Image (cartoon, rainbow, N blue to C red; front, side, top):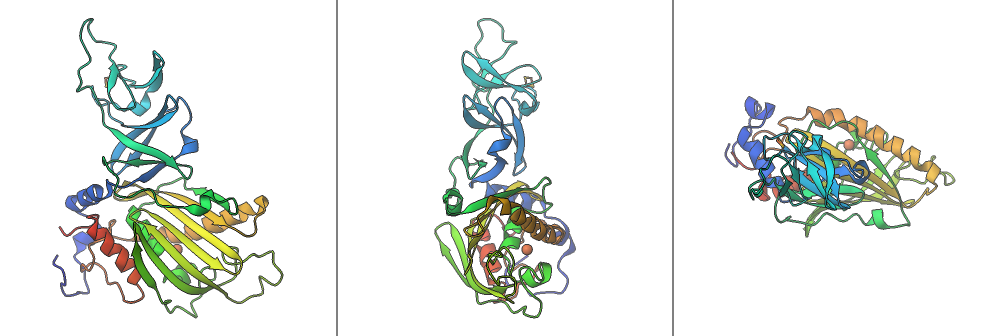
Length: 364
Ligand code: FES
Ligand SMILES: [Fe+2]
């Protein structure tokens, strides 16, 4: 497909249905040099190995001598999954032991024990599995598959701020879409009156707001004014007369931490409400979503469940739409596959352009 190709009514069928092997490989390569959240810290207990999948790569996570480590989940001997094994202690050093023949690896991936080794023979240096950069932040374990991450993990200042209350949402099931589509779907505001009618918008006023979009370091920033129905994400409903208002004025400032994290900041007279989404691209068409929601009003802990239910409801409205989109991966900017509409879709177009610059979508 060439740039500036004329728009046709019927996009090429194969491209719409599924990406080519080349497009999938571009996506994986392009996404490698970034931090991706893979698991909640709380879900990795001591002496337990957990398998996660990131960009099609199986990873065994474990706490070795108190530090979280990430190893390729594929034994160098005969390729069994290390995550089916156990953690052993060898002279005070924790190792991940393969369940098949007991080869055991340190946090750097080097094999340090081969039970079948003949006396006098050394462990070959090639008995090694890949190990990856790993760190923890915002209650999550993050992994970068490349040697050097392109950007730091994006900021989430409200998480660290005691004047906010934060609830988190864990989705049991992966979402059948790409992580870049998840981010785009969360950045998209013109769907509010359609998918979230009566909650985030109303169909009597579908006109798009005036978007200001710019780049700031590693962030794509979007700002606009909006009016939304009164609810707990726009209003302190315990305040007198709150529910009687017809619409609430607010300012949205959205920060996309390129390419896989988004923080929506909603400022209104009630205070600030923040939606944070960090996506894990398990594969090109499977994404695990880690959500958090912060507010600096209506601070009673027993009110948290109302925010959890509200968020889960909004999420359930979005999910089938996002899962219906094809191709799984966002196509190159201005391909024949889609028909973005300026200026309403400008934020999405800018996100897409940046993805293309990062090599995450490329012409094939
Ligand atoms: S396959 Fe892992 S020790 Fe043999
Ligand atoms: Fe939505």
